[in-house]
Amino acid sequence: MTTPMLGYLDTKFVEVMDDTVALLRQVFGTKNRLTLPVSGTGTAGMEAALTNVIEPGDGVVVGINGYFGERIANIATRCGGVVTTVEAEWGTHIRAEKIAEAVAKVSAPKLVALVHAETSTGILQPLADAIEIAHSSNALFLADCVTSLGGQPVDMDARGIDIAYSCTQKCLAGPPGLSPISFSERAVDVIRNRKTPIQSFYLDMTLLENYWHGEKRSYHHTVSMSMIYALREALRVVLEEGLAARYERHELNARALLAGAKAIGLQPAAEDGYRAPMLTTLRIPEGIDDTTIRKRLITDYGIEIGAGFGIFAEKAWRIGLMGESANERNVMLVLNALEKLLIEFGHNVETGTAVHAASQVY
Ligand SMILES: Cc1ncc(COP(=O)(O)O)c(C=O)c1O
Image (cartoon, rainbow, N blue to C red; front, top):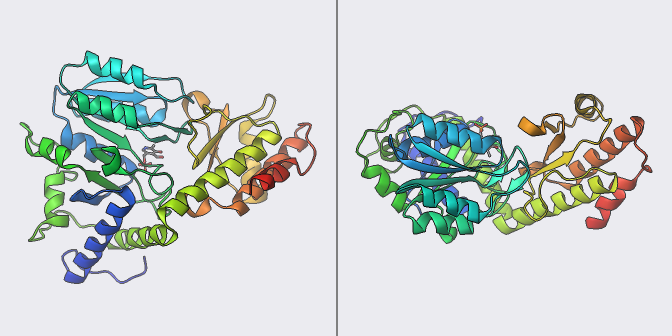
């Protein structure tokens, strides 16, 4: 990020942009031409995805099993979409039959949207059936990959995802500020055939496409050179490690964390078989004060874990192991710290139990 600034149309900077897009396509698992990082955090990607494909009156089906599904439904409604939600209890995945039922109720649905890794609950949502359901009713399929990209396979083309967006600050392990996004040809056709103009100028993909991919690049808005340098470097690091190795590393550390947590009586809050490795949710035991423990983790050990959102507020902790932070050192440190604090607050466990259980996994 300390690389000197270049003009937004400087030929050297255009090379950096092209490089970044080529790396992004590899990480998304796509050949989609319309792939680029949108200025702004993950929510900017969410807005860009929805505002470009939804026109007033369009039927949109949104899965909600946590906070970020709710945000998609909120933005889709603001875009004028007629939203049908498919809800599942927080901490569980959304069943394909329920998605099929909802899609069947909507005449000519334009879009089916799901959160791949729901950061508020730690659920990794299966996508295959939902994609088939969307496509068989001629709808586009959108996946929020804000938390999954770089930590779990997204594989847009192989799976048939039409629109995916992410962020830079989670499993890509960069600073926050950009939202990588990619649109399939089907999605691009939908954008080109809109009857109404795209409401947002800043997030208009047809204008952004000219700046990022046009033969004659044309100014749209001043992008952050520093952020693009950072994203390019983060993507290089991801691919240097290798996608498969990176996914495996996230899995391994999540397994070790959960084994250690269970050994000291901390139960997972997310459904077995559908847990996202980069975000582990643990139920807070009876009699343990959420805020006290999280504060002590920060002051005594320099570890920040997430508070529960929504119905998980004060009921569950969210432990992120994303990107470079998904490592054995952090797992052992947080387990040891949690164990010590739980013992201090009256939990009956033997010192060393959590770390021992995690070691068995490693
Ligand atoms: C699944 C999911 N979607 C969207 C967002 C919004 O991203 P941002 O906070 O980067 O705008 C987040 C943020 O945590 C997220 O976890």
